[in-house]
Image (cartoon, rainbow over all chains, first blue to last red; front, top):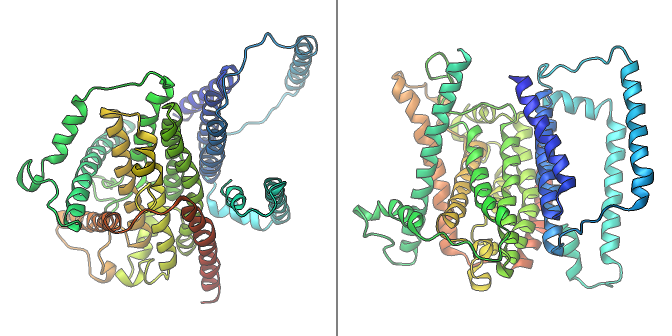
Length: 176
Length: 348
C-alpha cells in the first residue's frame, strides 16, 4: 500500500517538476510547482512526518504559492518566448550536466551500503518534534527567526524606498 | 477488519457524508433566504412546496438546465478547473471532522467520522489554504477586469486573515496539547458547558478572532469584498454561468458549514451535550448514537444562523478598513491571546 502511494506521488512530483520547466505560461508553471509541493507533502506523510507534511501544505503550497500566483496575476505576465537556447548553454551547459551526473553516479555506485529509509516507521508526533526543536536545536531555531526578521526588514525598507512617508504603502507591504 | 471491509465502510461513509453535506448546502441557501427575508420584513421563498421547502431542488434543476456559456477570451483549462477546485476543497475538509461518539459501529468502528487523523486540525487548515486557488484562478482565467479585481482582493484577504485564523486556534491547541479533533472535544466534555473552550477554557477572545477571520475567509458579509456587486458586478464569478456558477455558490456555503463545524469542535464542545459527562450516557444504543449528532447539528445550525444574521444586519467594510482590521487589530490580539494562554497555563 505504502509503496504504491510512494510510486504514485513520486511520479506526480517528477511529472510536475518536468511540466514546470516545459510550460511556457508562468501561471501553468506556478500550478505545476503547487503539484510538486503537495506531492512532497504526501511523501513526508509516508515517511511518518505528519507535522512536516501539514506545514508543507499550509506554508509552501498554501501561502507562498498563493503569493506566486498573486504576483503572476498582478503583473499579468505574458507567455514566455520560445528560443532555441543560447549558445553558451549548448557549449558549457550540456557537458557540465553530463560531468555532474557522471560524478554523482560514480559516487553512488562506489558506496556499497546506502542505508535504507523505511516508509512509515511509526509517526513522529508533534510533541517529539517540538521537544527536539526547543531543547537540542534551540539556537539554530532562534537564529533562523532572526534571519527571517532581517528579510522582513529588508522587504519593508525596499517597499518604502522612494515613496517618502505616504501612509498607503505601509498596508501594501504588510499585506505581502 | 480486513482491508476490503475497511475500504467498503470508508466508501459508504464518504458517500453518505457527501450527500448529507450537499443537502446541507442546499438547505443552508434556503435558510439564508428565509432568514434574510424575515430580517428585511418580507417572506422569502414560499411558493415551491410547503413553506418553500422544495426551493433548493428547483434552483438546482434551474442551474443544470441553463445554457453553459464559455466566453471567448477565457483561458480555458484554468477556467474549467477553477470551480472544481473551489468545490472540491470545500467538500474535502469534512472528511476529518468527527460528528458523533467514537467506536459505536459494529466491531468498534468509527461510524461518525470518515477518518480519525492525528493532525485533523492542521489538515483542515491546509485544505482551507488550498481553497484560495479556486477563486484566484477563476478571476484570472476569466479575462475580465472585474473578475481579476475580485480575485486579487480575495487572495490578499484570504492570505491576511488565514494568519489570524490559525493563530486564534493556537490557544485551544495549547490547552489540549493535541491537534486531534476528537481529543480536543473529549477534553471539553468533562464538565459540559463549564469546560467548553469558549467559557471554561477562557478562549472567548480567541473565539471572537476566529469568528471575524472566518467571516473573511469564507468571503461572507461584512467582508464580502471579492464579490461586492455594487462595484465589481459579481467579482471573481462574473463570467461564470449555470452549473459552474452554482459550484462556486455551493463551495461558499460548504465553507460556511466547515467553519461552523470547526468552531463547534474547538470552542463549543463538539458533539457533547451542554451537560457533558456530568450525566451518564443513555442506555439505549440508538439514543446514545443519535443524541451527539443532534447536539452537533444544533450547534452548527446556530452558527449558520449567526452568519445569516450578521449578513442581514451589517453593511460591507471598505477594503482598506478590512486590511487594517486584519493586520492591526486581529493579528496583535491573536498573539496577545497566545501569550495570555501560555502564562495562564504556566502559572495556574
